[in-house]
Image (spheres, rainbow, N blue to C red):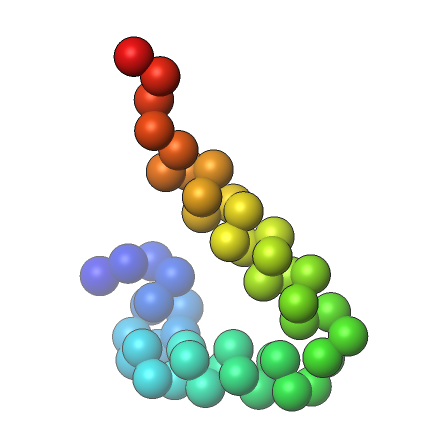
Length: 50
């Protein structure tokens, strides 16, 4: 099981609820944080130039 999922108690629905709660509690920082997260994931999976 993924280490980050274990940090959420092993329940994907709990993790989703926590993310949604954080978005509601801190709407002023949510969009920049999500842009950062998406860019980080995209950077981790960029194709390798041949």
